[in-house]
Image (cartoon, rainbow, N blue to C red; front, top):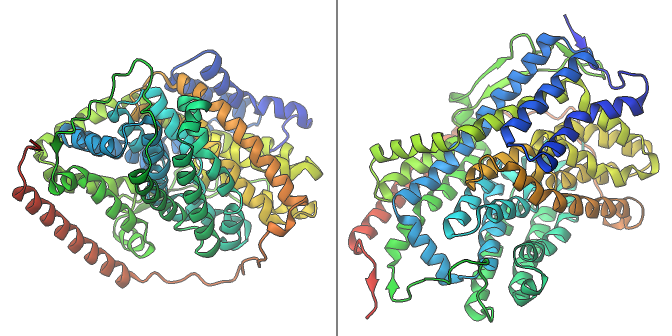
Length: 589
């Protein structure tokens, strides 16, 4: 039996909108006003969504339960799998004592909390978003900042806000690839349009972040460094997105801004070192000198992580790993049991790509790093157990959040919200980013939001005479500012920042910044649609009959062989350097 989605269950769109918005508004109320724990708010929101789906939208109870189960499973894999491995890798570094060396190294670059936030949350987080995505950047950078001595709330909140700039090009450009596939517009023009929107935000974001941390006056004190960080990032993001495509902007901009800021800090220092209130003064012992071998050993988990994550992002390697390490099946009772409003049956295929998943790449990096940092695998197992215990409530939260997301999507609740925005006529370009923002808030993924709304963005723009690439790109750009308040992202950041049970504080920390940035992108999109049309790239739509290329597995196996050789050589080199250097730091007399 097939059940058909409906958009207007009351035949009165205003009333349908009010009811459809209840689960979304509940999350805001629960976290901002009621200050509920994340898993409690998520479970109740999922229950509310299920009740509305069944009673109001007429969704069969069986389908509603199966939809929630489908979402919860997706939350466990690949999302929770990635989060667990990211925190595990960081915990290995801490357990081995190597993170103390990293803290010393960071302190030798700058002990100023404002500049540390730019280096780690903004630049390094962008690099990780470009390679891994799906929560890994926030999980790793938030844990690093907490380890450096940041307040857990500021560490997690800053990393969520900093993650705004790179999300559109995350995971080697997957969000834009999906937007292209769904809308029928080629990847490059979407990449170009996004790359003419987000760099404006990227220039301002470092100053915005520092202002949040230290206030406007203290942000001005590090204005030159902030300018170097923001301008270098934005320029590289613009150039790579407009001339290379969507795959590399985050990697290039992230690494480029790190290099530019570190070089700049060799010649310029702030007049005062800023720390948090009641935080002890910097205690970097300048008489301690670590050898190059010791520094490389301390950073080895993240060096290996970078290499493996980049390799995992290469399409030939993905194809090989999926050819031997992926299980997929039609979700029983749910596959093609729901008919969309366009008459098509919705496929519900669950894929377990256990080898090509980003979490597996991080696990491999951790397994390689364990002996490099001086731990035994028995100690590694103990660290993994403690990591699982640390993340038990975030795992429950993420599973509940994804269950909620799948119910509101499968029932048609999300389509009701989208239909209202699509009927705004001439003002639709202003509201186009809101659709992306809403999609990411619900699903936690810019990729998923683009899959949901890119076709709607395209069709609506055509109907009002606006170039569709403007609104499709706006869906991508609007989605990035929804990431910081998505319950899924909040759960990940809370887990990494030791804020489990305090998700409401984190949500209240980020929500106003999400709205500020969303309004900015809305006005910018409106201007692009009607005022500054010269900014729109010239392009052609995709040919739907284009043949799908046959995977070249030979190339993938070659890449894997090169990766293996490279990792072996790196491991041997690090162990050799470590044997030659003293196990304790040299003291400068």
